[in-house]
Image 1 (cartoon, helix red, strand yellow):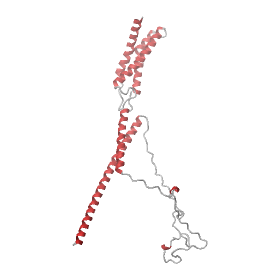
Image 2 (tube, rainbow, N blue to C red):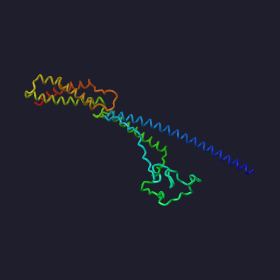
Image 3 (cartoon, rainbow, N blue to C red):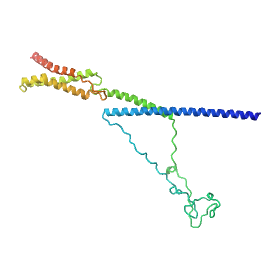
Length: 283
């Protein structure tokens, strides 16, 4: 009776071990599926990040990065010892060359004894000697195995950090180099007003030149009413197109042509009138 109970207990123990093994195999399979899914997700994220970085590089004039492709380098040929001779079968001291050695390999064959005897004038094969690790004969120790879950978590953190820096880069790329903290309208007004101020300074120089007879009245009037305002307007238009345009922007940013035309063609004549009034007051 005790023997039957022992067998029953052993059967229950084996069944429990089997169920535990099945549960462990199912958990391991589920873990592998989760790891593969996480790896695929990270691969898609990294691919998208690489494409976005290429777009950012092209926006600032850097060509798209290319990964060099080519055949993998061939592994170095394994060195052979004195007994190998390039992978040839180990030949013992026998009657003929190339004949497989080892007396135990063919017992009972004629002419082959249990141990081959070294005859007179024959050379005994040298036994392999121990090679020190410094001589390079001992292979390097295998690297410690890493946990794929930890590696995937680190890769996910790096991907999150890369996304954060990429978003900051995109925000910076959407800001122009000229007055980046200003609104587009305020930037346009400042640029056109600055160009009109330069035109007003040139107008003052021409007025002074007209006073000494270097410029006649008709030429002065033409430059004040049309020439200098037009030059100021086109200068502001070009400045906004060169330095007022973000590196990454969908379409063409507005340059506020009508506003610039009004500022430039009104500022220079108004500055001329103000100069005349100031000149008369000071006289």
